[in-house]
Length: 405
Image (cartoon, rainbow, N blue to C red; front, side):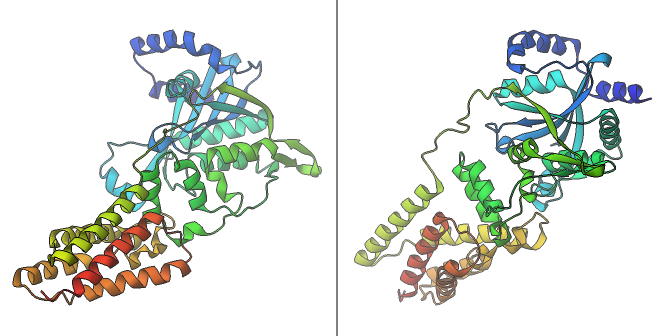
């Protein structure tokens, strides 16, 4: 029966003969890269893939491998499969209601995909006896059934890495317990995100706009295992505590299946958020000085600034109120970015047309000044670029409120 289920699972991911032939041809070139040691007996292992160039690959990836040479089976269970064609995929992603699924593919296709990406792949063979292997395999196959394979994705608490860890621990629950020899540190979710998104300052800046103060709380070592490389490191020293207090290593062998082709993922980026907002601040100071000397008001610039601030505030407020993504609900950037500027914008333009004094801009001045005064005391990381933008807004609002007409 088990053999029949495996055959059906592989059939779901079969490809055309032409594509398989092409992959087999490519395998002749990539075969030296695999470097996996052959085994006469079945084994299961944790596969850890290094970060890639694409945004979704910045943190790396984790999968589980089942290899049974006697039955000519070599399969990879992958909890990182998602479907862009799913109805309302973007809306669900924004709201934190994205569903991922467990996928199953032959090892050959999996390793070739990462070889073509230039990513490294490390295999950690698990110290499981035949009973534990069978139990883990059965759990994975049960998870792979259509009614079970879909799960609610959460990038910190339930992703491809934590799902692989949890199912390994579940397979050992009846006979032993996995012990990790790592100490809790001072790292926060934001620290880890910064470490892996440093190659893309704009992506990192975008995440900082959405993560709230909960992302700046130090996390335990187990929580940090949502990162593939962290789990791989923790597995390397972990042990299985069996009945009678006997202990054995969780990992019995480590194989470098692929070496990363390019470890400098992303490359250097010159035009960063800091450079953009620093340039904007300098231009606004120069423009304000020119206005003061020539007694003019370039009000269209202020209208654009209010619009940008309001739209960003609308997005952040929406995420705070409706998204179930972790940590976004405590985002204190709402002190600066909220829908109020969008309400002030039509009044601002109306006063310009009528030649009236912009008394309503005192609301903007108070809001921005309050943010700058309170920000050093709030328990949330604020990007430097946001401070520069806030100073830009304060300069303009103070300048406008002192113009009679």
